[in-house]
Image 1 (spheres, helix red, strand yellow):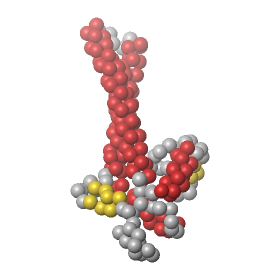
Image 2 (cartoon, rainbow, N blue to C red):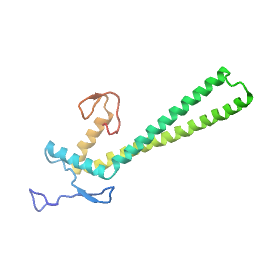
Image 3 (tube, one colour):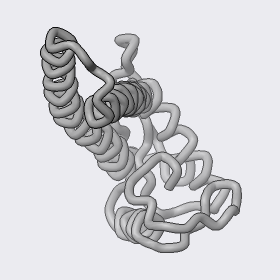
Image 4 (cartoon, one colour):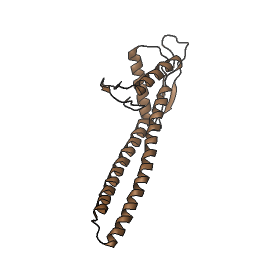
Length: 179
């Protein structure tokens, strides 16, 4: 790309491969321009990241965490019900008690497995978000990276923090889409 003010200066671009196989180019932000130009740049970056499929990967990881939490809650609730029946002596026959013990032990094992899967899914969600933040950082060049890193640090580590709608939120949000 050629600079409109200085035709001899070439503006570097970043090549991105979109999820649909199309190649696109985005100019890195060099820290020169108005607030409006910066917001336009961030909209291009957001669209680029969306086109790369990074947001959808994060959403899939988030959905997996949600589904595993539901499964864990359902199995835990069934386990508590079985434990309550056992302690009250509701199972009267020996055959029922043996069947109950097998089901109880299966539930305990399922809970352990679901907790392991949930921890892995949470790590996957965090990793997907980290990729979004690091990719966004790549769209800044030179001295403009320092203010961006400061903004990210302040927004993700501050308590309370302000969301995009100007509403104050409590608790450290970390590197999330909400930040």
